[in-house]
Length: 170
Image (cartoon, rainbow, N blue to C red; front, side, top):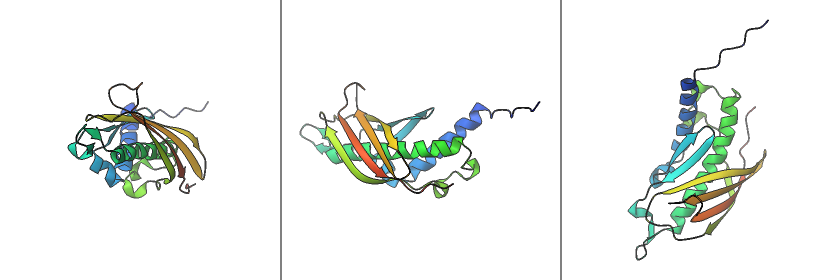
């Protein structure tokens, strides 16, 4: 009878996943400029863009700038798609946990097209977003993303994106 390998302690697994996500996010300087952060619950990511005066497009209303909103949704879609690929490689052991840093991460997908629906005014407050990968193949991926502020059931913007996937190793 062969002995089963002991599972890694949950804290070790969590630290490895968190380190990979941090490296992925820090690899895109614009994410830091917008102040976007990501929280992880298992493989699910939620993006947060904290309110900042520099994000206001119309000071009369005031309302979030449409470009800041679109950038927030696009960044969320790219990180979700990249995280999905990275998660698979991490869990399958294809990436050495000791080498997880910006220089050892897969290339990011390239945006083919990005369509935003502005559903209501983005208010001067924190915004949240979650993306769902609809299809991800070797060359192409489709992602849907929704952004909300006070109520997840009432998104202020949503987007559909198509990406050219980077070549995968292995």
